[in-house]
Length: 446
Image (cartoon, rainbow, N blue to C red; front, side, top):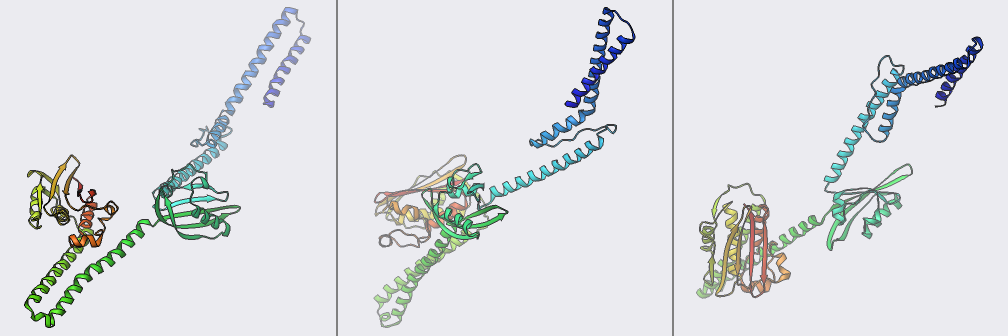
């Protein structure tokens, strides 16, 4: 700017000097002097304009380059400058264009890596939290938010604003204090529900910057599955042992002197037959569960639900109850015949088995454009509210002493129904009141 002002000043000074010399060499009148002043002033202004025009033309490319450097620094996509080979700045502009191309490719690579990192972070089944030395969180994925029961925060954020579990905060602090990775199993209450998390921390330091990365893995379902497997083995062993003990005991008795008595022999053989039948039913139900878990796709066909209900009723002793089949004969759905038959069989068996003498059972079905439902209601003993959430567990039979006085069974019927329904992405609803009856509805997609 100073150089430009200096050049303009020099032009005006030179024109004034020339005007002075002309007036000294040539004698002019006052009017002629006035005209000369105007002429020299116009000439000086033209020279200034021409100088500015030439300089602007020469520096236009540099101005564009400067503006594009500013835009790149502001985060815009790097752009080059079109340079003519005759330009005095051609080499400089070519180097600038190469630099902009390098920056553009670097930005593209960095953005792609960031996007890949964010996608990976969001899709991980593991909660990931990165905490800085000043306890500022700069990484917090959606899985971690779900596991800790908080809204997804905007990072960076102070860790105390999102990590409200004292034990987890203590592990992070201990990692900072010892500079050593930590590992622990935490039992946390998240939204009123007990959850078990495997927590691992990793300490990292680069210069004066120290960070702790926290990884959370939800063990709740895994531990629940382990408990269910342990319970299944324990219950299965007990259920097998009971009839086997009875069969063995009575057979040994029959092999002794008691076998000579016809009445005793008949009575004991009936008990052995009953226990063998119970053992056979138990094996059959366990095999049914196994087939559910390792099932191959079966053929889907058009099913007449009322006919399936009637077929299953023929296999059940319904002498002590009245059964109302309220399903229209032409009510049909598409499904797997063996699955629907198994569901109907187990629902009807329970509604009859746990009913009252001279009780009633009602079967109905409904459907819409997306799903269909079969509902079985009875006037039976009902299920206490505190047991209703567990009746679909394997071998669960409620109050054991109360149930066995009413009916024997394997405790696997509703577990089989639940397994089938889950495989078909369906649902089960239950309504029951002790002494009034039970209604179980199974909803399956069409």
